[in-house]
Image (cartoon, rainbow, N blue to C red; front, side, top):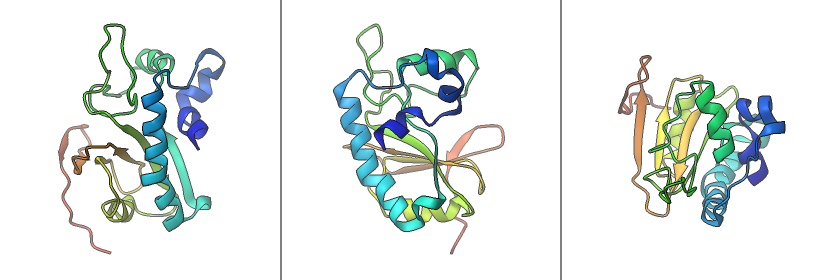
Length: 164
């Protein structure tokens, strides 16, 4: 699953021959393993492997270069896709250490996925719409924050208006 976390993005698939998708910092790899154990495995156990789809996982330094070229909306300072990777100034790219992925359960409303994710030891969740992937992160010091993004891509606290 760590390999899939490092190679699941569309940008990686497009430029795979030019990108090293794997972490340089061993702490990043440990956080990815914790993300897998604490979040991904329980999600797969709940909703089934056949319905599970990773749409974005770990962002290596190489992948970041291509995402920036494509003007991706990645926010390296907060979204944890770079895990514990360190920039050229010796600082972590992301202020919130941990690891993140974007996942989708095919045929399931993302709000139902969030209801389940809330039972896990998550750090943050981003909701983009009922038929879109959900961003979820893990950290050893979880903040347990859930954000909903408006059509203008503005974050606001998640409104828990959906009941199962």
